Length: 254
View (cartoon, rainbow, N blue to C red):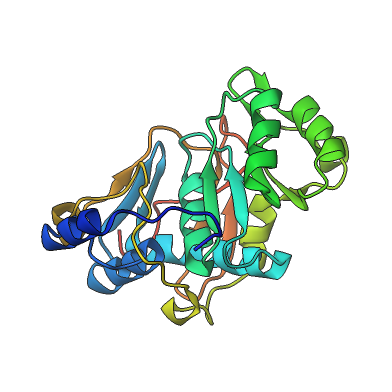
């Protein structure tokens, strides 16, 4: 637990466990257990994208490995300024699997608000799209990059036709990192347990989790990628969609 953090009152903790509102399972492990129970059931739905639990675990594991390779550690804070896209789920669970702390940031936060979040959380990474609707993040990325010394990594979700030469200097592609790492060696044993579950806007209730119910997102951010049984990737670009990375619904187990 971070220094200065105020834990939940003991009576609240006891009540939550008694009512089974908390199961004593970290969110990353909960996802992996769901994969063991329902590997071929639908786990995540976005427009044009449907993932089984097995596929979703693969992508969250890839995100976790990418974060470790970048040097993100347990209790490090990472700003997630991601719209309601599948990349948000990959990043969120990937961070939980390594014990890092995702900091939720509304996509419409201004530069001043993001600078404030950088300072008070002492975040060392920020995941953000190049563009969302009419918002162009590039000027904000360039300014914050030059003023926030603790911010070591800015990971870009590519949703435009811009070449990487036009990206802000020193940024990395989150989508490229997902394609780079294969999760064959990653397991729940690499996760860090926490004293209590972290509240999350997409958290399932106990009944939803036990039924294998899918998370549903409203919008994609991606061209499509087919995920084979051994983790091979075959890119299949789709017209009229931003050039990001999401798996397709073509898996034979769907």
